[in-house]
Length: 228
Length: 227
Image 1 (tube, rainbow over the protein chains, first blue to last red):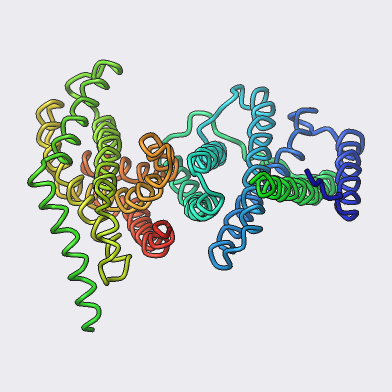
Image 2 (image 1 turned 90 degrees about the vertical axis):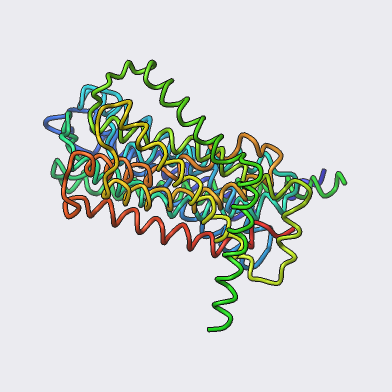
């Protein structure tokens, strides 16, 4: 097997992403004030929103790469699309789980059928179905072509789902009024700094992970080629 | 203009063919009907429903049974084309392939809508309330239209896979969630006699889904079928 050397820029990016994550963690743990009402558990918020953001961003990236594949028919775009879906799935899962950790003490329940939570959970299911679809297809070409179609149709239903659940909620009485995590409390300047830092850090982390996964997909494809 | 009439005629021919196949074989509508009734019975005992069901529950029950039953019809409609390579014959026809998509989507719509129309009096009987109301039928029209347009596209997609028999519900349900929410909520409102003006956001959502998913079919049907 021909394991091509890891590009230098990618190694630099690995180190950068790791440093940034540790740096953001220190910033959040030691330099942001403890929120007056919620206490220390509010600190989950920084990475929670950042990973939800990274998840959404990578699903959009996956659909865009899918569209690029359908137009150019270059398999590289499919590697990118697949990588983005896989990384996005993990980020969304982190967002859901970290949200639960926060919701248990604050809302006194692990789960609320709120638009954001439900939409994220449905998104997980859509992209799990994406993998089930791919695993049932035989050729890399079919995986790429049909995967691209599903990724694009999937991403256009996400705003529809969010909108319909929100409408559903505003018409129905809300049992546990969700205090919107992002807007219910006013962020102090230092909180805002940590929040924006987390968003930037997770975007870098996302780019690094997708790149690594892309490289893996390319090596897999080469390997398959050589095995033939 | 002449091209457009020819396009419409091609769509009509596909619908006609599907209706003829259905009439001779009777394998779609009766299966969907029996299946949806079975679901009603299962839910009735699983959830211990009372005969004087609230409007919200009966609307939900109607849509769940329609959504499940419709998957059977969609799968059947596409696998029919796969048997004896009938699809190749269709694809050889010198028409734009999206005409085949619209034909299949419309015939699927017609069959599922027919099932819904038969279910309405049955529901009225079982759950002691008149469900034959025009606003409700409007929501069923729009909801089934959006659902089958997305369903036809995804059924054509899932038939390409080795796992074709189990794939469609997994692909379809998460994407169809907004359609089902809007359809259930609109139907519920229509059943308790809310004026349409109060339900217009659901109407718009269903209209938007119809446009969006038919457009997706128009764009991607050919891509899905290339070999």
